[in-house]
Amino acid sequence: QVQLVESGGGLVQAGDSLRLSCVLLRRTFSSYVMGWFRQAPGKERQLLASISRSGTNTYYADSVKGRFTISRDNAKNTVYLQMNDTKLEDTAVYYCAATLTTFTSPAYAYWGQGTQVTVSS
Image 1 (cartoon, rainbow, N blue to C red):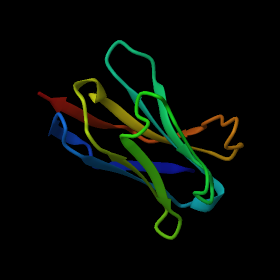
Image 2: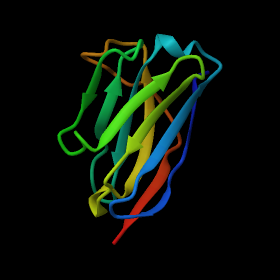
Image 3: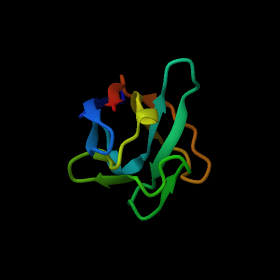
Image 4: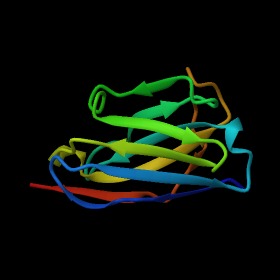
């Protein structure tokens, strides 16, 4: 069973930085394309960023491009989301996800439990 465990959420002030982490347990982490999503109240879940198995390729949604950075450490079975220059609209529950499908057309099958990020003014 694939298990993803997120950490690092919390309350920050606008403009602050935050780093989210997600560990994939009991599987070969390097086999998975990884992604970060978020869901704000009343809104659909949105893909923010994804990273290929080796870490060579990344994708970012326009809303976070230039502010957020996705990275992975295959030796630690961990994917990260570095969030800089946070904004009020970044407030949401953040989820990491994993897939064995392709980086260019991923179908995420495995999800973490989510971690709350709240940005205050």
